[in-house]
Image 1: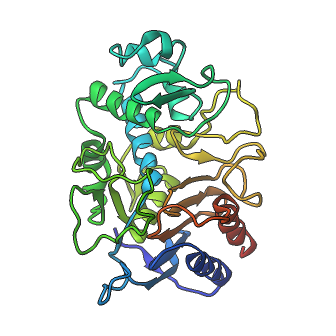
Image 2: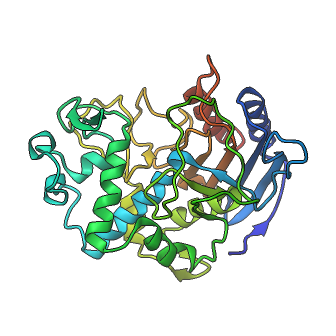
Length: 337
């Protein structure tokens, strides 16, 4: 997909902020891409793909480990399954799709709860347990994501990766987005603490694991795909209902309004919420997804903006307030308008 390039200095303070962040986190390279009104207005890359001597420079086709940003792709697959009719409703019980799991622990838990991190489930030493009643609080737990990928496969007969490949990657000619079972020269090395238990690798390319890598420019185009409601270069690639469903507020109204608000795994800006990861100055209707690597995709429909920042670090150094930093990313963008 070709976009016009109209580079300008309007967002220099955003670039400076991302460069400053790259110096604070343990990374060897970074990138920032901003699209406004269907044109690339910022595109900068710096550093190397690894800390090793002779490492390749970070450039346009460098693919970053996106960590939890992958959940926006899982959210798309779920929205696609709902729109297609493979899933009846987001308010269906999880137990009706995964009857092999403990029905007593799952009681009253719906797909909506999984999609909005309000399910209250956790995995403790391999056992499914409950932290809080479904819809009564918010907690970021991987077990809900595992369930969603299983439900996608059970209901559609296809993996998350297969749905994305058929519905998005092939039509949009994405070549720098995917799940990788082994490394290659285009993938950054993820710089991390050796004993970080959050890190794992996988040979699965089904879209159910954390091994997703995307170039900054294609991640921005993924955001643009949502901003334009699936209509790219004059063609409706996917029903606008899918993208609207994925990025609109889905959180149950039973949770504390200060807790994060979600669509289909996206963080969405609706009413003011103290624990939102989206900047205070970013307008209502915006949505964002953030990964443990610091990779961030922010979409601001009110201003036709898509913004991406990318690093190859995993986690944050002690004392670094990553949520304050990612909020500042959005606020700096708004200050440039």
